Image (cartoon, rainbow, N blue to C red):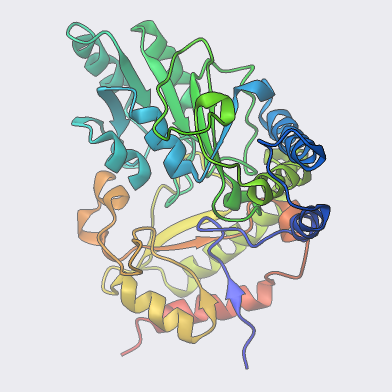
Length: 375
């Protein structure tokens, strides 16, 4: 039986060993509910506080500005429910596009980078009739891996008195995030993108801005997100953050080397392949590409049969492959149903945990990709 090769890390990162151990340790502590005032309640509070501290160190922010939620999607919905006018880019994750219900869409260029000139002109017109505007642009695109010029987005938005949110789910663990150096008002994160369990996310917010919660109840999380805290998820998120504090952009050289090796192999064996956003500033672990005559769903199935787990950037919750809105927004509408994403471990620290992928296996993957065109 062939070894299963997982190259879908942008979808989810497997639980880190350190996280698994921390969860078992947490379960052995006892019945934890941080709302209780007795011994076990205090232990629960301590676990949450440590996790908040670890995450705050990872992104350099005040730990008291971190609100735990059930996912990054929930955090985004919580935030967006407080705004009527939300400006988004055309390549945002569906968590942003669906929950914002926005008609204020900023296009991207063919490299997938948000059009800053368009954003400035658009906001200039929009602020005349709106006082409370939220601009939401993701830090790293989940399909292409393209890094958006967030500093410039913030600069333009602030020029017109707008608040700014950044979906940083795909940035965490791949590039340096320092909230002391950038004037973001809101940031949303997802634990399972860095090796924590699924079902835990966070909203980092400017506590000078009043937000109305969506979920009401016992007043947990400073009254911003009621419901008994998911202590296991929070513990795991905190441990994953602790693990990768020193494993960001400067420690992605091995991941980038493997990605670039694979990309060059594809260019040699399958020169018809189209690479999306190749010239843009990207994180080290992601490739989105397509063969013009091969539908994405067919490519995924054939690669899966060869023991390679990859994805279409446009896969939805039903598991079906749909047209990629990101590829369409970049001007490749004719290829929007053909794209396939290969995402390596987010950084060298995670890559080094096991012999996750070798160049020999990438050679076989490149050959399998080339074989997709065989008649």
